[in-house]
Image 1 (cartoon, rainbow, N blue to C red):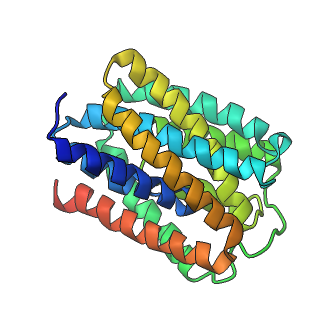
Image 2 (spheres, one colour):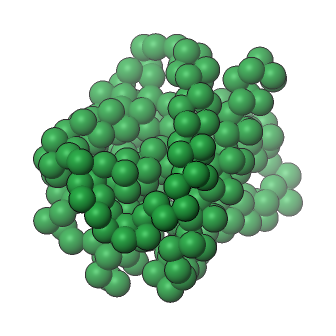
Length: 254
């Protein structure tokens, strides 16, 4: 596909902003998908290209969190395995199924997450008691959220963060770090399927991916340096914006 010259600048800038947002609170897709589709890409090509550029951002954020000691491989290994399996099944399923039903349900789920987070001011300030064992937690959520990210996608980072905080007892910083590793895993799996299907626009994906690296590096460093209150505010903002976008797409625009 060919684009007007100015679009390449827009793609780069979009990647930077989305990478920054994704590294802190998730929700970068609320920016990237509309921009890709506004350029004239059909939905399936926009989704495939988005997976390519998003892989760079989640990869950079993961590397930065690992380097700064926020992630231990022994703590996330089992989650990566189950997420890989779930994403593989979900990405295959999207080739066979209609995502319209999920697109109606997800906004309702995000409402619950938004309300819970809004009225839990101390959520994620400190590590606390886990309600599920690590293996059981990742078996349930690695498969389910991995499947969801492979099949549909919006809000994946939000779901991971809220689950890690509320059920595994992690503080918000550590949960954000582990979320990026799981995001990277499911992105890689989905991208592999889309590459096989031939739907990726490589020039745009790599350009936005370069922007993602810049934004993710800055955003992940901000998570490390800032207090939990800042991350929580950013998280709530992105959940709210994602919510509005999904409700508009699912119940108004359609």
